[in-house]
Structure formats: structure tokens, C-alpha cells
Length: 531
Image (tube, rainbow, N blue to C red; front, side):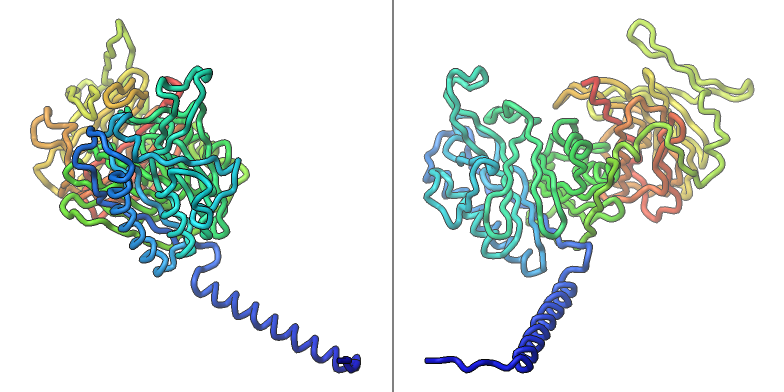
């Protein structure tokens, strides 16, 4: 069969029509995409999961029984992935311990462990290549969820990795066991593996031989970093990811037990996002009887959170947020550097005598002297335990005033005005030292807290409700540049400060005109070098 020649004019006409059709298709596709996801934004999801737990994690079981329990949790995961995708989510984060549970021994967790290859060494899609590695049934299900719903998926599992006896760190049983986060892209490929660095009494797991600093790329928001639960309190790998790699978005599986007044989950998650000017997608496990709740999607300007100590149901949070822009200079250096000037909304801060209180350390004890006018009495200093640390406090008395209190090298200052009269006791507290209960790390803290009752001994107790409206400015002469601003309101609601930043060597937070009652306002400094 022969083909008749086509005239040049006709060929040109056909090509123009084809180009027009292609242009129209691309234009319509771009318009449709813009309608789904605004430019510079993406839709994220986190799920707070009421995990189904082993009734006896200290008892030995087999792989079949372990998979049976994990599949019950994975059935719930699959429902949430579908629900999130239907709402336009492009990435979903599940909590730490959500699939297998917790409180295992090294031996009893073994049937729950999966083999997780390093994604840098092998490209693997468990859903499409289920037989490539053994003991990967959980990874296969997670991969298929991501593939079918076309969504990035972040989950936490237990992983095993054989090691040789000539490895000096190899455990006696010949294998490492890691608390492991896995990330699948929207076609089900395993793209990231993170092994938890800072274990929280997790005797079933090993600390990895070297710190994992893990990033993964997405087409909708660029690169993300990842770390787990207790990691958020330490330099490695959390701060290193942000400083060295300029990460602006974090996925954060956690199994966090709330501890008021300074370390409730949503309170510190927002403080971390605010301090480093990043977004955090945080998924917590949901077991209110264990104090475990608090998840959210956080940006420096807005948070979408969930905290519920009454309900036993899980919660899916879906929100559209802005892609955080990459900066040439890490925000942690430009934002929290001592000496960076800021402007203050009130004149009374500038007029206060910042050196009126003198502290000196003698014979391992701190003695503080409050400079005072001859006709004024000194504000009483008292001591009370808060967060298992011995804080020095001064009471917040009257409707307005200026206070100061010191410990070791840290002096804290407060200027306040109570807008409503109530019979609630508040106090300004300071701690500068090594925290040694449930972890060892050095903190410097200035905190305005509501006390549990009207006696000084109740200051530092866990409190979640308040009625007082208070305008305040809180500042201190911190020795560390890593300061996390906590602003917790009644019923575990969050707020944002009006001003944050450095004035010479003082770091300040201020808030006025809030319609919510104050529970805690604190500057939580981490002095990593002194851990």
C-alpha cells in the first residue's frame, strides 16, 4: 500500500492544529492542577492512631501471631490512607509504635521485626517486588497503600539487621534491632529509612552504629527530614538536619507521653516549628490512659492540632500548608543568634533594670540577691519541683508588676499585667542545670506557670485549665542560642507570641491581648554542649 504525498500547506495546517491541541491540553491540565493544589502549597495528613496492642508484650510469640496483630493495625492505616487521599493529601504520617506496639523485650519483639534494606543501596518497590526479601509483609502492605492511593506514606516499624561478630558493636545474638521509620513515595517505592538515635527506655532496640541524617525528596514540597519522638530534644540528628542540610519540613512519628507544664506533645511540637521556622508533620499514638495524645501539622504561623484525653478514637488531620522556602542561611543561625535586635511593643521592657538581680555560685549552691529600693520589700523566693527539677520561683502578686529570679548563670525577668481578677496563683520560675530523670540533658528555663493551688508548694504541678488573662513580657540572659518558646493556654490550646527574639544577650517573648487564659508561658533553652 502506497502513501500519497502531503502538500506543505496541508502539513503545516495539521501541525498547527496538533500543537494547538497539545497546548490546550497542557493549559487545561495546569488549570485543573492549580484548582486542586494552590501553587506553593501542599496537602498533608497525620493520623493519631489508637493502636491495637499485644495483651502481653513480655510473652514469646511467633511470626504468624505477630503478623495477625500488625495486620489489624494496618487495616486501620489503609482506611486512613484512603480517607486522606480523598481529601487531596499528598503525604501522610503515622505514629511511632503504631503497628507493633511497645513494652517488648529484645526477645519478644523479634517476631514483629522486618528486614529493611538501605534505600541508597537498592531501589525496591515491595508492592511490585514482594519476593525480593524475606520478612517484609508489613512493608509490602504499606507500599501497596502508597501505590494505590498515589500518596507519600511515612510509618514506623521494628527492623532487624544481621551483623558479624567481628563488628565490635554487634550484639551477642548476632543482629541489630532498630526502631525504624520508613518512607514510601507515591508509586510505592521505599525512598527513606531512618533508625532512631535517642531511644527512650526501649530495651528491645539498639542505637544505630552511626547517626542517621535522612532526607527524602517530594515533587510537591521539595525535601523533608525525618526523626522520631525523643530525638526532638537532642542535637543529633534533629538540629543537625536543620542546620547542615537546611531542611524546612520535618515528618515526625512519635509515641509521646505528655508531661505538663513544659513538655506536652502539641506544646513542644509547635515550639520546635516556631524556633526553627519550619513545618512539622507530627503523628502521635493515642492512648489517653497512658497520657499519650497530641498530634498536629505545624507551621511557624499556624497549627492544626489534636489533643484529647477523653475520647478513645483516632483522629485524621488534613491541612493545606505552604511550602517552606529554602534559605541561603539556616534560619536557626539568623533567628536565634544572640545580639540580633528586635523591636518591642511596650516601653516598660526597655526601662527595666536588667541587671538588678545578681547571681553567684558558691560551694555548688546558688545565692541570689534581689536589688531593691530601700522602701520596698524583696519578693520572696521559694523552691518547688517542676518536671523533676528543682526550680527557683517568685510569686506573681497583684494586677501588674516586674519580677526577676536567677539560678546559676541564668536570670529570668517578667513584666506582667493581669487583665482579669481571679484567685489563681502564678509564679515565675527558673532552672539552669542538668535534667537527669527520664533522660539526661542540660536545660535553661524561664517559665511563667499557673500553680496547682494557692500554696507555693503547688507551683510546678501539672495544670491544664486556667481563667486568668495575662499580658506579659518574659526574657532571660540565656547562654544557649537554642530556645523554644512555649505558649500553652487553657484546655491544652496553643497560641503564638507577638514578639520573639534577641535584644543584646537577652532573649524575649511577649504576648498581649489574648482572649485565651494562660497556663504556661516559657522559654525552654537546650544547652546541647553540656549534655
